[in-house]
Image: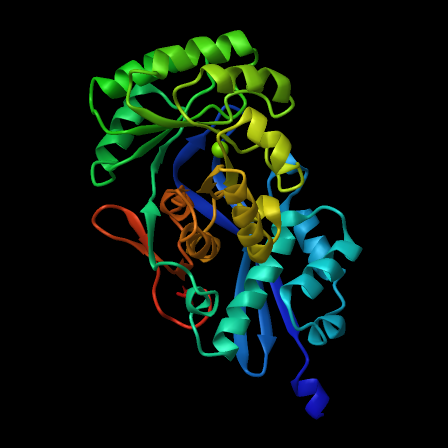
Length: 345
Ligand SMILES: [Mg+2]
């Protein structure tokens, strides 16, 4: 009986979340996302985790649920640290990084609660107020972009999705309305080095602070050329899934965008930040379309990063969790609640 009490019990389910507005990037437009939530129950405490599986990486809510169903819950009970958890999960499936991220996130939330300590404190984070986060403007009609710019008024940095044949028009349209700094995300949309160079030249006097994934992730050699000419930092997102050697990426990119759903682990993400720093690379913490649960886990990591892009939950109409907040400068502010600092509502 006592043994039973010490067993880990997992509860997991998928949930459809409605977006505030249809959201588009260079590959798709959608009105809903279906994320997977997991609860790590042990000793009367609950750790929460969230997966936002991404078709770009051959994952879906169905594959994430099926992965979680293959976990032996009594094996989890004997696990005492993140490395053990990650190596057990990798024996079940080589992929499913979003589901793995959800489980490890729930594990850390539980560890924090068990120690009655905020995770940022447990991990000795260098600060509790992180970098400025951006407000994302997807690919849309001018009318919708205009509305979104009005919504974005309180936010100091705009992230603009490009990678279309109207990139210049979109930027000119935004620049007629605001001089705010812009982060560009081309989502692999500039297919050749010539196109990438031409777009970067156009953007170079438009107060653009960084460009995410200018070219397809496979174009590492072409990106070396682009990196040599660009005055704007270029950040690998689709080009960095957590498996590519950073030494090689450093030749083609100024920095990397670390997302929990690609890395599959908060702890591995932290180690990757340390590694990137030894190579002089910049670090951005990004997100998929996630609730404040996974966004708060990303918020903890952002304490070590240069840029945060964790506004996924702001794109959602459904907000089943409360977590970190933004201050008046839109910087990430962590709370001191035990664990990740999230509350289901
Ligand atoms: Mg991106």
